[in-house]
Length: 202
Ligand code: 0O2
Image 1: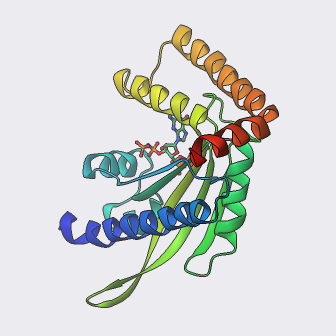
Image 2 (image 1 turned 180 degrees about the vertical axis):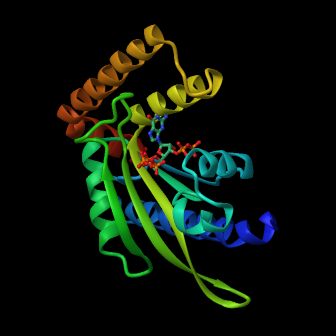
Image 3 (image 1 turned 45 degrees about the horizontal axis):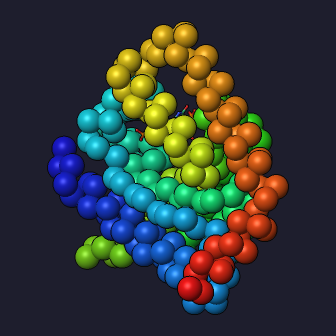
């Protein structure tokens, strides 16, 4: 398989989405409004992870582009839970891609404790052979959700997907603590934003 050729449009999509989302953040800043976007990251799934996911789901390699939806992945990290839904609303209104699925793991957290909002999109990317429709996953989460997910992801990697039960239950408690932190911060959101506006003016 010519992985380089297969993955090239995906890395272009990741770069384009990052530019567009960073553009949204910059616009909020020009208008001196609170930006619902704290930072943006993106990646093309490593070849080894694509192969492992395909094997796990019994997806033949010739079907990976149709059946693995997160080869291109972009993550939007927000300060507050409300900001996630502001982004979701803005992304739904865009005309440069089509949303084919949404997964709200915030109101329906995963058993691991994972929380995040996912969107699967179909994005038209220009290639030298014409337009190619490529799927991408946009994950939108708070800083606290991101902290939890990053740590849990490392542990999952360390324990090859079988985290010992005592660590698993600690992680579940940590997920609840992270959610509580988000709730508490939401209550004093206006205070924080005002402080940040003053800080910004200085
Ligand atoms: P990586 O290494 O991040 O690329 P599904 O069949 O719907 O359950 P699917 O299609 O993988 O599974 O979609 P889902 O559940 O929306 O998950 C896609 C990605 O979300 C994962 O990609 C992770 O990035 C993230 N994610 C989902 N569940 C968890 C979780 O419990 N913990 C953490 N840390 N991240 C999670 P990959 O391919 O698993 O991993």
